[in-house]
Image (cartoon, rainbow, N blue to C red; front, side):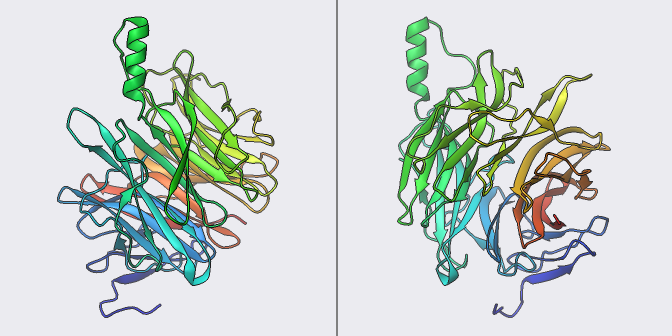
Length: 436
């Protein structure tokens, strides 16, 4: 790849077993290798708070997106690798309107790669909070596309009718067939109507969070989004998950509000490309009763044999109540295996799991957890038979959270997370992990 004078790209050679990773930022080198064990490499915009990463992969191409906050402005940046994550080119800003972005750990910007050869397209989605009049909440999901490898992007636009009121976001994104992109998100466009109907019916004013639905959308190569409603009555602030199979099936998972304000995992599938979804299935009766949102959604994948893999966090009450991670599978999308607890080496409050499939029919799972008073990122593998390997810590001493992960190469994954050394200083750190 041709680079200009003032390369603005640095290579970090990591220790054995981690691999060579590159990082970049505009305005000058910002790559810093972690000096403590385990080593990692970083992406970041100088002088900004860098956070909320997402990753996508197609062949040897890896795309990383994240948000950079500087002087009160929040923007989305993207950097690409064409060697499986060994090196990354200079990041580019995605959104054309300055500070056209809102994000948090459960609502990072999302990226997906579609196409083949030189015709690859990068699609980026992100949230924008509270547009419009101050008293009428109107949150938006925005998008932009690049057809030149991430060097330039189209002007940002809405993925929905911009007149919709209510909250929306917590979007997930994946590539489908024939250049299509599939997204699942939470949407409050009908909240005001539902509140008014409930008030008229009961004679009581609505209390608590406004009603939310979960939607699916197919974004075609022409940029047109075709929507479908999956379910109503969902948990308000937990990220969604979406996966597709080679036959055009679409799978969605989210945290649902079951009777009694139980905040458990729900799943639904579509066999017609996302136009219609079967009734939701309760993945596990965890019975997490909460009059609020855990802000901790599921992760979902479907393997070549059609086995559905899901991992999530929920509350357990063995001793002092705290969160734990669980994993389950399904062969028909109607019933799931009994939940299996993900091992976490005795640390507390693990959450925010992310998962990719492994060649042996199992899965790799990463998450964040509290250890010695600091939040760290850890990793494990589960085999096709359900056997877990001992967990390993990936991050060092900095506060690390909300990891994301993609398969990169035949025997490895790339894991990225937000690493915060101080309240006003954070970078995106990356590590390659073997799954052989």
